Image (cartoon, one colour):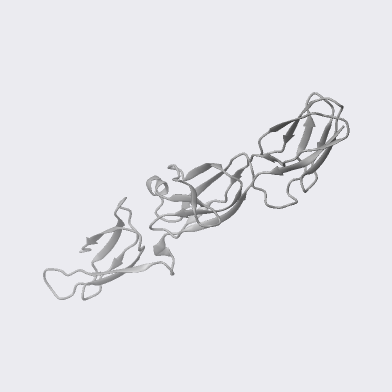
Length: 239
C-alpha cells in the first residue's frame, strides 16, 4: 500500500516552501519527508494507519488512512497550523533618558497594509516583548512624542522568537530636520539692557534641563527645542 498527498505550511506563500515536513505512520518504521512543493509518498502495510505530520514551528496534525492495497491519494491538502512567534527588543533614548520616558515609548507591530497587530510599552529599563504573533513580514515602530520615530523591518518565522536590534531614539531638538526654535523675551523691571539673563528650558514631565542660552540686549532669546515636548522655562539673573 502507498499513500500520497500534499502538505502545506499555514501562511507560507512560496509554492516551494513546504518541503521537509515529516510524515510518519505511527507505531511503524514508515517515515518520509515532503518535497519542496509539499508532495509526499509513503509506503505502508495493508492495514489502517494514523499518519502524523510535523514541522518545526508548526502544530502537529494527524490523519487516519485505511492502508488498502494499491495507491491511495488524500483528497485535501494537509495544512499544518503555524505556531505563534514573538519579538523582543530594547529602546534607548539618546538624550534625556529616564525610566518614565522609556516607558512612555510606544512600540507597535504593523502588517504590510499598515494595520497595527500588536503594541506594547517598554519596562523601566527599555526592554519589551510582543508575543502571539503570526508568522510573516512586519514593520516594528518605536515612537515617542518628543523623539524621532524609528522603524525596523522583520520577517518572523513560525514559532520563532526574534531579537530585534536596539532602537536608539534621537531627541527632536538634536536633529536639524525636526527641531524648532523656542523664542521669547525677558525684560528687567529697571534699565534698558536686558542681556545676560540665563534661560534654561526644562521638560515638563521630569524637570530635565535641555540646554541653556542667554538673552540679548533687548531681552530676546532663542534655543532649540523638540516640537513634541512640553517645557517650563527657568530664568536666572547671573548678578
